[in-house]
Length: 243
Image 1 (cartoon, one colour):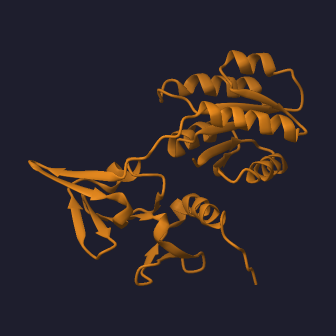
Image 2: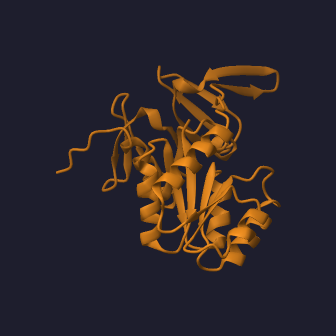
């Protein structure tokens, strides 16, 4: 199972160190880094991470309030792990439902035990592989693995398939953004792409190239964070040969 996580930490050096520790486990992917509680709530609602790491060294009580506020917007909160240089916030963290509390500097053995306990607690959920496109009394079932990308067409959405066919749904692109499996990422106001079909990302030209027919899809600045996440995701199990 792939575990997506958010970091809420204004200290750049600290969050880089945390990412370095988590890279060793291979199945943890950072989806966003927030600098404060407002960004933290926004990114949690946007990316629906499995885990959230919060640096409690500054404004700890503000972050505890943030966790309480999250209950207003989502039914099931992500697993939350607090990070601090001392134990002064540990009691409040546990009282607010934190899964664990990590002391800095990090202890590799403690982190390993915590993550193994976390994996044991989180069941592997199979994502749906079939999408139903319904219109009046017509129900069409398509395999999500066969989708290349989705394209907005006014208030409708076109599903461009690997075999070249196009399926239409009379719903906006936004409707499908959070319904599709995790390998579908929005890169543009008009496009959601199947990341398994991408062969190249060009930041200079602002385009993603698909494996099929070398077709290029544009990405926009407003979805740059999604592209950065996509680059990180595609780079995890690759051999790097940088010039």
